[in-house]
Figure 1: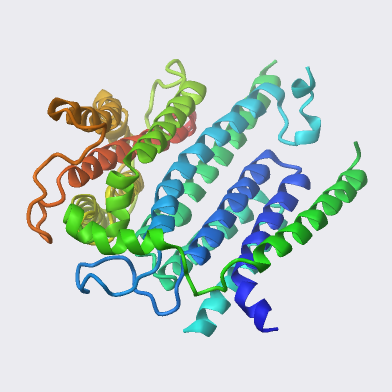
Figure 2 (figure 1 turned 135 degrees about the horizontal axis):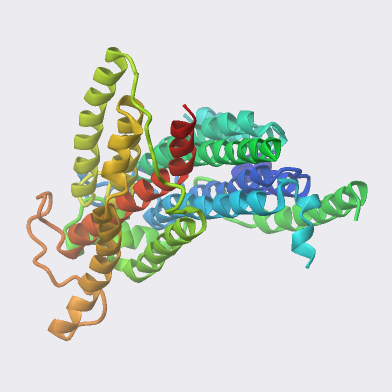
Length: 118
Length: 88
Length: 244
């Protein structure tokens, strides 16, 4: 039981990842697929954040605390910070592709996109 | 505080399932917006204010806005095509 | 392949992943007991080495600067892709929608726009001191501009966001980052070396190239999100205007 408490946050990350994959696998609407992909993406945030977390650690900003106080890991935060913003533009690109696919094929269901099969 | 952190993680897990289980895309955008805000709260609680600030703006406003606009655009283009067919 | 079979295969794969993931995660250090040395080294040394009080930005724009440059170009190219796919100069004619929002909405939006503008600029320029920086400030500045669309009519929004200057600023932000990195060569130092005077810790003009790069990133992110917003809005609004 104690062990489960210690790995629970990592399990949440895996759960979010599987939820997103489930969404993609069962998707009947391309916009739904894109949003599910965004959910898959967020599982990495949950995992990284919890790997770098330290109980009682301060935020890694030394504007008003003296250097030397133990903080949480700033490196994983730097990894997430750029990803949050870049992810949004990648989603915009995917949505643009969805819009174009709809205009060309007239459908939004991945199963009906016969154009993809060549 | 520990309990609060576990609670937030639990909520994130539940909401993630909720977002992908919502089949109506307009409702899903709202769910995504809520999920983005929840993630921002999670970043604050886990001592990552930098990430939280960008997550608030991106997850709660920018990303749902873009999905909404894409949906509106597709709805609009299908109406446009219907009009064309009726004109023929 | 029909839906039922797809679900069976998915659940098989998911169960396999769940087992392996559980086994892998079991041996991670327990939650809340961070062990790795790198985070602690960064947290203690960057205040003295780079004169930044926000360690996350010191890592993003300096220690890990080359990687962030790559992400910057992902952002740049994906916005370029959206513009290529969705922009259609032929369709964008005859916008005749006039804003008929209530006075209260317009007044409120104008007030919050001013506040958000100041906040976004503060975020962009104080990234090296407090939480914030180019990425966050840029997104705030760009989303604040959506208020113009709400409060005024689309024409005002269009005049601001479709201006060639926005596209130029986008390119300038991306190029500025690379130029700051290349400028280190003038001092025969490696790419992205922090050669500018570091200044006094806690001062706005401290931390050398970190502040400069943060400002470039802010410029690019603002311009990128403005162009995204305009591109998505363009067709919907222009044609509703024609119809009535």
